[in-house]
Length: 211
Image (cartoon, rainbow, N blue to C red; front, top):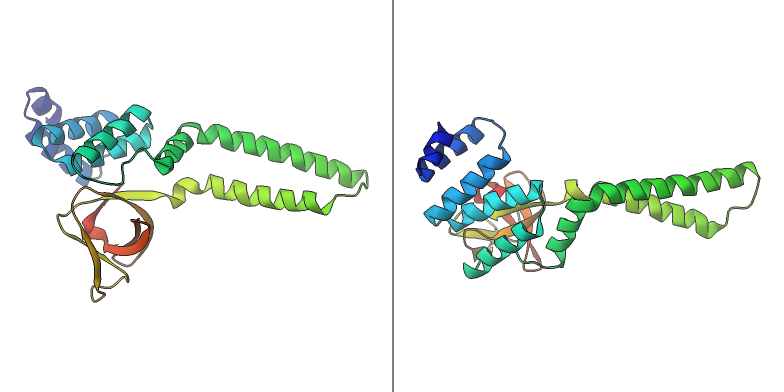
């Protein structure tokens, strides 16, 4: 039904049905995400357009999508979508992360084989080599778990209060509008801890579309 409405040019009605399907627990297909982005672009709802493009980008990292989001955000005075080092690092990781993990695993396997061979031959293993292995394991652990530690979201209300503490009684440190992208560093009860303008703040979960 939604596809038929979209094909007939009834994009807003189709978007409502697509979002109802998502709310009912149906998985979003790539085509659905792109149609939702197009529908909200036609409607002039830039925050939702950017949200669905960001969800699509998270699945299919592509520099053209990143640049398009950056251009749209810049024109509309929204931040968080810049083509900066962080976003390019995330793009690089999403594109080549699996290959880098395999390379690091192979390198680690080679190093361990060398160390085991030295142990069997009763050769001395230098202390600095042990430290290298330790730092390698720590680096590999961080690299493998990087996607789980990185999460972002888009502000969903016109007035979103940023607070220094996870409490409604805490003073409001800043107020931002709808459509900004923020990095999420954790949560506590109904609050999300975010990184905004080089500062840590808390905002209510219902003020964010989590990607």
